[in-house]
Amino acid sequence: MLFSADETIKLWDVQSGKCLNTLRADRPYEGMNIAGVTGLTDVQKNTLKALGAIDIEI
Image (cartoon, rainbow, N blue to C red; front, side, top):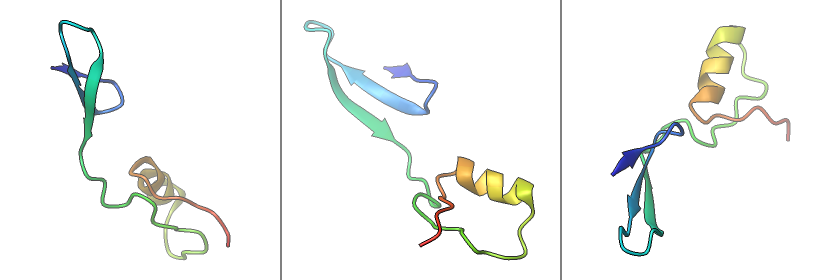
């Protein structure tokens, strides 16, 4: 088992050298659109984006 820089765990078949599966932890803010949200500082917005939030005007 190897821990990747992208915070995933990869399961490998040691005989073939192929990746069998990639495991990721749940990200509670994944896909949350924060466009137009008021009351957040730039630091808070950047933190939410790092946690998977998006900032796209619809």
